[in-house]
Image (cartoon, rainbow, N blue to C red; front, side, top):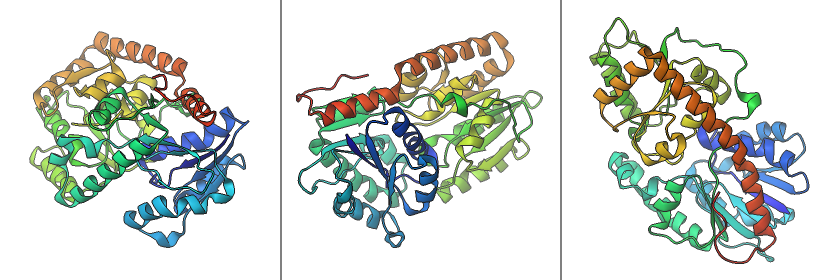
Length: 383
């Protein structure tokens, strides 16, 4: 199989970037019988070539393309011609959209629906007005890709149900995020934040619900109040500024440590050394944060939304999204009750081992091999 992985939408940080790194590192190693090429942004090309170390081809568009509209237009129209010399049998697009027309012979098309925001009314309520046209366009492009694709990959059953409620996908497979590879789990802990602290790894986006965490921390008695380590970029400056003002109004400046965006390899040790990790989103596809916290042996507290339940099961304490009082109570339990903390960690360890045995990467490779072999039409087994 000649597999072309379109990751041209992957930024330099976040879950999309982490998945790209995993694929560049693992796909050629796990399936050396196949030829693999990756399409990435120009600024990531050298880094991905270093990771691939000659085991895969790395392609990128011109650096002159600039912002998202031009990149998406290139992805939908020029990418098939740019990659024609590679002659792929299968094209896997990692981020919702896939070019509809390819030179003959047409490759099999697979698309991963990694962004559920266009299908969420809640996300539309929280999104800034300037983001709504982009969401509307992405919704249309995603629906078109799902209809055209020979195989649709979802990261969660919740994602599958959300999208197929309004857009049928005849062939599909669920490929969740896997736990971080064992060699990425930090062998020793090195935190820039004095213990005890709780960690929140989330960009400053309105749907992340970070204000609820700040309000919950403020409700905890000063003598036992933990520090809060915040990791993430600030893509929405107004929301980030509102959080900064809330920190001042709640008099938490001495308890909140804002570390900004960190590389994945630095965020993992920070999570590993935390007394608890809080997954606080109001809406999410299958987030990496619960799985990473469980794999690192850190107690998990999560907002009670479907994707968090799917990711963590009984290995988390849940609170109603937006309920600062319930979150403060959960934090007191995890910080002050060793049996509760140990139970969560043990349940997280068991869930991590189960996820490793399920082997999401192996499931993805098998689904793509079946597609390349022109498996009979119908539903691919959900893993």
